[in-house]
Structure formats: C-alpha cells, structure tokens
Length: 134
Image (cartoon, rainbow, N blue to C red):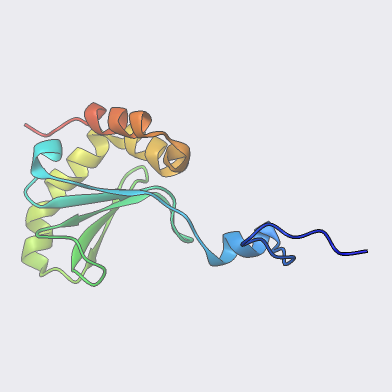
C-alpha cells in the first residue's frame, strides 16, 4: 500500500500556539503627523507591546528604533519619561504632549488594548476620531 501524498508545503511538524506567541509578538502601530495631532513632530502609537503598560512616544523628527523620544505612559495622571532628548527639548514638548494624550486617552487606550484585531475601516475610524490641539 502506498502512502497518501501530502499537500505541497505542509509538513508533519506542529508548533504549540503558546511557543509561537512567545517568539512572534504581533502588534500594530501608527505614526501620527502634525496634521492629526496639532503637535510639532511625530507621535508613535501602538497596540500592546512587551511587558510595559499603555504608552505613546513623541519624536521631534522622524521616529526610529534608536531615535530619542519623549514617552507618555497613559496612566492617571500621565507620567513622562525622557528617552535621550535634551532636557530643554523634552520640557518644551511635555505640556502639549500630555495635553494631547489626555484629550485622546480613551481612543489611545482602545487602540492599545483592542486595535490588533481591528479591520482597516476600524483603524481609519480611530485615526479620523483623534482630536488635534488648537
């Protein structure tokens, strides 16, 4: 008796879901321009990442993996963390960034907690619903 052929590309090996999730963390992110925020610079927002709590990051220029930024933890009250910016730049940006985060806190938290499962239309509605600073 000859064995039944296997479909191309499919092998016998199976990986436990817990192992995949641990090794291959999924998240979504968006870089928000001045037009969306009213802030000079770029605000990076994402769905849940790593072991830390909900947060956003502000970059005075283009975001990058090693670029200096100001982090706002979406706690009550918000807490800021300067990651490599000069103290002068961080102080100048902090009040407006915290105000923008407070204005959009519920939307940002919803994106952090639930955004990974959103469709394109839901993501667009999130972006369109963000409030800008005057």
